[in-house]
Image 1 (cartoon, rainbow, N blue to C red):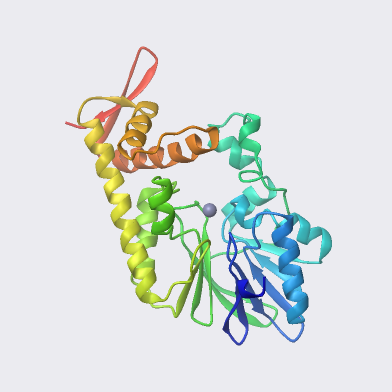
Image 2: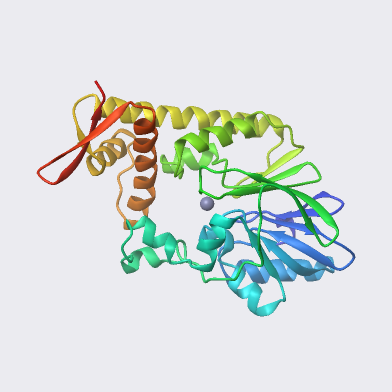
Length: 302
Ligand SMILES: [Zn+2]
């Protein structure tokens, strides 16, 4: 277990687990955690680690409201006096977690398969909603930056020239495996990925996977930018053979990417990217819609 913990500066550590969790020392006694992970086991491991480091948990920063990043918070709330912090948009989801499966299901209350702990965390109350800029917390100044695209209100935290980026940068290993990266807005995702590409932090700590030095995170963001553009091109190529509903376009893209959808969770996550691509193409005047026999079709704009 010991080797999961990596020290990155005299006051910053990372627990490298399924979700990477940051630990930032605030003073002699207290610390701030970043993205404590998805469940009770992650929370327990974090508390055990803090115990060993001789620190108490004062606060938790949640980069975005995906259950694998903040599902551990309910246990931390019950067992510590910790406060929780997030952006205004993500705070709404953290306080009302059912919103996530509701919007993935299309606005109606979700079927039970979409209330798995991967999509539905227990709620916690957010102590303060953080805007981009300097954030003063217990005598420390951190920088909060907006990194939308993966999640609408996704933020990153900068401390000692280290960027905790949540899932703003989805890594090539994930994309090679799952083919559909989770981005809910292609325009802001490309902007965020370019921002990361052009930045110069000592290290980027992604939500999942290895810690990245500048050369590595530039290589990764370049890969993901190319991948998103390729996915847009695949959608355009499929639409070039005639009008398609979103469902049909999703099926065609899954075929093309040789990654058949076989579960409701996979379906709604993959569909989110296709809907994001449709919005991107619509906003850029590349496609238009029409209705026929109660089906909603999209076609290339002539
Ligand atoms: Zn996420």
